[in-house]
Amino acid sequence: MQAFRFRLEKVLRLRERQLTAEEVKLEELSNRRAQMRTEMEELDASLQREQVSIQKQQFVSPAELISLDRYHGRVDREHKEWVSKIDSQGDLIEKQKTQVVEARGRVRLLEKLREKRKAEWKAEGDRELEELAADFSAAQWLRLRDQRESIKDVPPEIMATPHR
Image 1 (cartoon, rainbow, N blue to C red):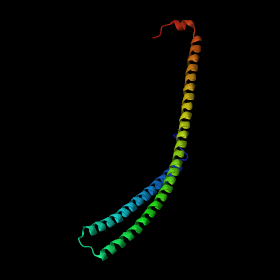
Image 2: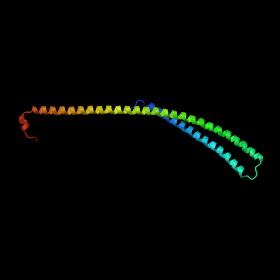
Image 3: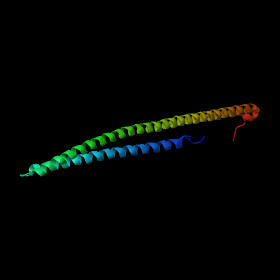
Image 4: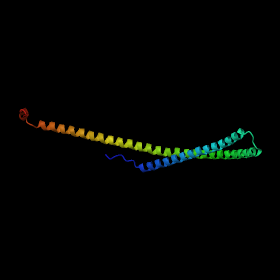
């Protein structure tokens, strides 16, 4: 019997590589979103530091308050931009998750097909083995029958002599 060979093995390997590529892309998108959140949090923290710095001063000039107000406005605008970018990144991540799920489904389909083919190959091998065992058993039975018939042809006086 020949060794098991799945005809679509190259296709399965290709699908597995595609799945890996899609998973890597998803990971990159997720990492980028995390980086965006960190940058937004750093921006917010810088505004907090400036506000705390102004509050700790005993005397604050009007120019410093105006500057802080302008900085606050700029941070608010940038914060809104970051939220928008993070939301867009989230949309890309969701689309990529769909791609990963589809790629995973294609791989699973081929894996199931391979397992089905392997089970069929094993069943065929078992049938062949059973046929060989049945043929062997029948051959032994025929040989025994032939031996018994050939013993019947031996004259009784030869059969009566002891074997040495």
